[in-house]
Image (cartoon, rainbow, N blue to C red; front, side, top):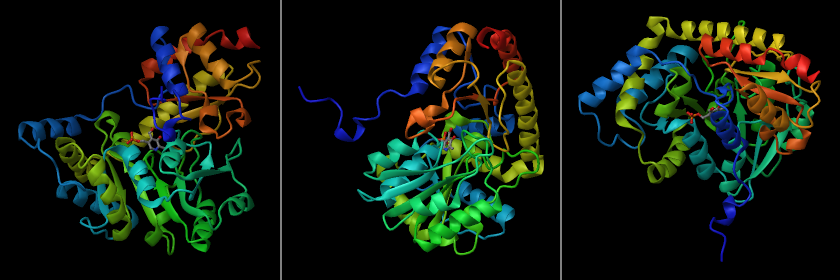
Length: 391
Ligand SMILES: Cc1ncc(COP(=O)(O)O)c(C=O)c1O
């Protein structure tokens, strides 16, 4: 019998996330693995969605997004970064950032084209590049500060590079790329005429005065960059899957061509609610509150992990902490995470899944702090004794 799946999916298999989630359920674990908040998003956004549903905004939206949401996205960008955006040509609403990434691969990558990104990377990047027929190429970020070698970047980008993906603030490391680093990336992209996909889904979750610098705001970068975002991260409604892309008209036209035959449109009432969210969040002080609140959660989890003998690395943005586990005697991070969930009832993610060659990954574990303080405290209780048990 022929294999059931097409050749293009033959190498993907079941992800370690699926295994860890199943183990977490089986062992009634506290889930600090998967990256989503276990607390409710803001009432004013929920109310706006409920109003939209009751107000019968329940049919297909225009394919590239409702005018109200596109206007709100354009106004938000203009307020923050001082560039006037044309909401009709330069903004497209997508079904989460995941769809934004995927339609970009299909819209820009020809079979055999190379797509460059930093390693460790968000896990969807590789399968998406491969499904588009592209070839993933990575540049290593080096712990503990996750810096990269600019010559290493230059060595990887070349005539076959079509696209560079830059994720900042970065999942899973919590790194916020600084101006010098972003300039180095931009220079290489200009030099080799490479398009840029800027994954900025954690752009409002920043700590300790770190600044978010969109690569599209650097000289001569607007014309070659599509910036993608996820209102799910900013407004703690990951299940609504409302994302968006901002960039030059020609690049938007290309992704819209794919988007119309992929999902056609994103859920109408949730677009309406996210328009209300973006229109009013600033004056409500929501963004400051979001970052302040996440800083407290980060600090709480950091202390818990340190007490448990799992020293966390610095986190400048996003909602993830990476802990060192190389002193605990486990062969792989997957072994450690299995043991953590089965013996201690706490789920984490093994970051080797974020490397092209998992065996080359440093021994670490990823913990998500988008959690209630009570969840973090409950995890602390379960982690008591871990240190002495494994040292
Ligand atoms: C770096 C990064 N990009 C994209 C996404 C996908 O976002 P969405 O849930 O809007 O599809 C995530 C979600 O975890 C992410 O961490």
